[in-house]
Amino acid sequence: MKREEALKLLRKIEEFRQQPAMHKAEHDFTCRIIAAMVAEAAGYKSRNEWTAEIKEA
Image (tube, rainbow, N blue to C red):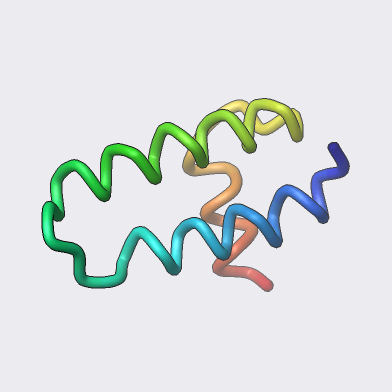
């Protein structure tokens, strides 16, 4: 997976994660697991790395 594609997907996951949810803790945890899988596939080494790129974009 290309980093650009992954970053678009990670941005969508992050936006979804921050939406109000019925079970907020489970919603947050699930999104973080999915984001970690996508980020790893794109070669990111940490959450800080890709969140910094989202903020820069």
